[in-house]
Length: 407
Image (cartoon, rainbow, N blue to C red; front, side):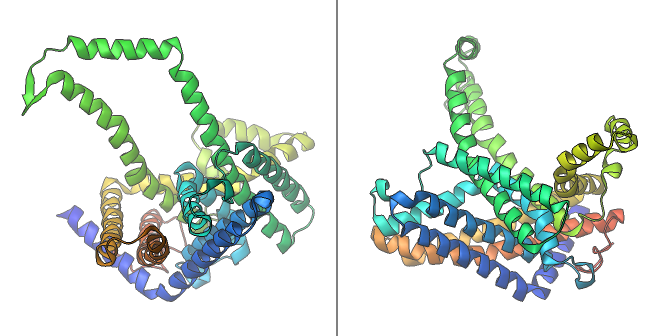
């Protein structure tokens, strides 16, 4: 019953937060979605010879989309606790883009681009504005983006300017988006290399031998013990592991992303490493008299300290609140995602079968309607979980401003 009360209270608080801030949530979502869609379609109008320009336009659209998500989360914070928009974007864009790349959300963007190219060019892939197999182009984008990020950081130590922040945001987006395609290419090549090694064959032979020596006895219905063991192994790697990553880790990472928006001023590196082995190393670096070394180390670790530290600290807050809140939060997120899926299927059922051209046209509208309903609701759920965890631990001054207290 306590878990059910936790779930109902969390749903009530998320609903209250969503309703109070619905106009800015819908506004930022719509702006980001529109810019992302328009830039994607604009890139398809360019000839193949201008693929670099087309890819740049695509990256600008993705950066705008993620920036609007960051600002949508910021709109859920109490007004007296909000940082300036550019400061919030500078602290949060890197982590947001990193999660996009790590969880394959960039792949969703690529799939949308493929749909846009299909609408413009049909099935002739040679005319598409993006080519996932051209990893060399994306590697070039990633290298240039890293150099720009480093230059912005160096220049930013001498003077601050808004245009520098904007250039850094675009470079962050370009680096993550381009690195996704390069990483996908080389992970695939690495897996192909691994599966061609003798060690992999030994593992496969050993596993087949293990399954083969199991007694051929039925365990349920018409399934034998060897078939059951093989089925469990297949389900573990093909269903359970990806399911845990998407249904458990990804929502928790989104709560951590909220921490980069709300709590990047509330956490310090000293607090995170206190009591760990890294505390002594951090103390030695802080007390060193070698000023160039200290400056270089501070510059090298500034991004991790300023952008990714709040994510780790937020995960620590969630862990400290206990399993009950985490479980209720995951159930609530799953319910909202299920509602979005049911809405999508209802639209497909109402529209019915259509020719390919008509399907591509209405899918854009359908995707917009579904995400317009589900994304703001999910952002409210993520923010509510962060606020409850921060309020319980007394770690954020903004925790009491955005959601009704239940504790």
